[in-house]
Length: 188
Length: 325
Ligand code: SF4
Ligand code: SF4
Image 1: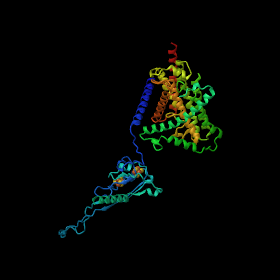
Image 2: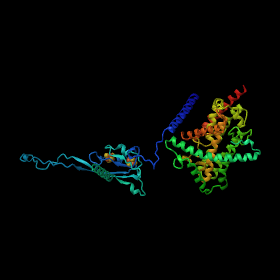
Image 3: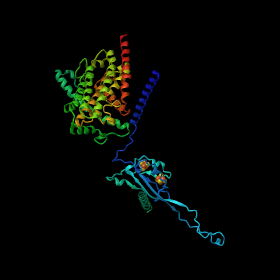
Image 4: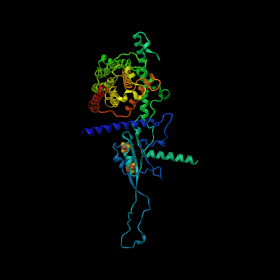
């Protein structure tokens, strides 16, 4: 009884000393912060920063998000701030009509046969109400298509909560246009 | 440096000493605030105050001006006399504690043979001040802070005094200058070598008596907003603040006089050695503050009653036996 108590105390004292060692080491290490107005961190170095979420475009088409409309992000968000609407549309392909050479056969094949249609998902709208977002990151972690990421806008500020209701599809479009413009200027 | 003992009239000597002490206390407040914030900053890997003056060195001065210029508000329902008496009762004894401290071989205000008792008695008055502040504020947080402070001080006063008894047994004196002289200039001649346990107990009790983290329950900002000084504004708060830093200096000064040889050092003994030791101990106090989380109240009392009091009693017993044999 007394032995275990003494051991506990001894371990406690040792852990206190370890704590002091850790803070002392950190005291000697260089600062991690920068002197803000005189120095800033480049957006690409803001690796740990969490702005509001935004959509990631498809590699082949910067205007279309990678999103497959599964709705997982909307369901998992603890604050209910994501609203995704998608619809299924047929992929444009030539319509199969029955072979005319077979018209005489007893089987009635004159009616148009529904071909095995291929459909794809189109995202109609993707809205984020950032006012309620807790930046927990669950949506980013769980998106099966890797279609969500945190934005890096550190200067986001406004007087109206309306400004924090984002249409992420429009945002993606704007970003894509800006990128196209940039590329054009590069090529000139 | 002036030799205080050559001034003829004791009254003039005390007045000059008091002015010196007041100047020192004010300056020390500025230095300590700056050090504290720098230490906190660098432990958390940030620069601390940086904008006012080179490396933020004028920041505490700016803060002091702000505190002085602020309006002093008495809350509705507070007892106006007790409420404003409390910061004074907290600060005034802190000044008295500096008088018997031997800063250097000739640099001592009043050389009395009960210097140690005087300091311990005056520093205990701080509890009364915090109790009054909490009681008269008409605020539940203040009252809770005051209640915690009394329980804490009562618990820690005992091991604090008990840990000093072996020193008195060994040196046979209560005069701080004499205690300093019984130790030599070299570290192995200091009393900390003979009494390491007493030194540790004393130093931890100083943390608790000055309400420093991890024993800062009376002002626990995350639980009680600011504890006993929640309602104080302007210099009312400023005085509590100054008093806290002064008591820290008194505690560290006592530790360095009793255990670390006071103003004596390996080369060229003098007041610089004393200040060096005091500020080194102060830095340790700040270092500890920014390392540990606050203890729970039962842990705080357990530590005092179950560990420090029995250990210091044991220490006295052993020392008494060794001295007698
Ligand atoms: S989880 Fe990803 S793929 Fe699914 S709806 Fe959200 S963004 Fe689209
Ligand atoms: S970060 Fe969390 S709170 Fe914000 S949208 Fe994603 S899931 Fe919702």
